[in-house]
Length: 366
Image (cartoon, rainbow, N blue to C red):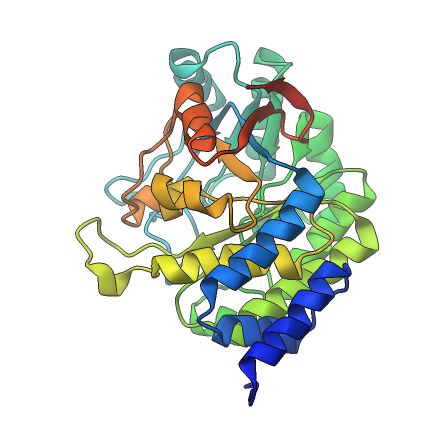
């Protein structure tokens, strides 16, 4: 679908009027914004919406990323983290080994463990449940954010349980929220082309629907910058918007730009900064029922993250400690930031840093 615009200034003014009146943008509106090169106007509109929703505040969390296993049955074309069982670099940690790693890197202000990992078919579902249970027993005050919707679908297959029963079992063990990964682009054309053989678009949405119905708040992502069309990006956002209308269960949307296979990859292999800022801004404008849009410094770098706070982003992610998935794919950013660095990053953009918990309850305003 392409939008033919004879008078772009008039069209942008119509969209600005919709934004001023809090009216929902259409597929055609989103496509026009992607086709426009008026980045500053798009950014101003997104900033207006974000300021209306969040004032001058930008949020961050003190968290730690954990990876129990990188063995995975999937072969997604964009992933450089996964390994086959027995391959060099493949690993699977026991809960005890993970607890040792956490003990070495833990500090008392950490409020969230963010667990991402491979779909390891050589392990029973009970292994994954036990990992959560032992972590929660050792650190009862830390929120566990674990298992993408694609992982929940995988657990459903290996256990024979429904999505809902998988979620209930994990929640009983200590799970509090799902990360947003595994969404990639929610169209089957994209998923077929990029060898995304894990959860289908509908299954991904249905896992989150079930989680929301069980009272869980969750996260949503979009992995952009490869073979998807601009229409597919907008349709992805609209599917999330529809589910949010239905359940009001999403906390934040995280647009993730795809990373090249090597840190030495040239500019041609990377998503342009222009596109990254535009996508953050358009996300803010399209997802009118999402409280927050996250600028993921791991993928877009710290300087662009700073800029994004005037392009609609209200979340700076967190301390992370040591990120592995994007860095396995050639990310140039730091593997983590300290609390002081995040505060400086946000203040440097003229915003008010707010330390939060996973659910955006304010811990401290700086």
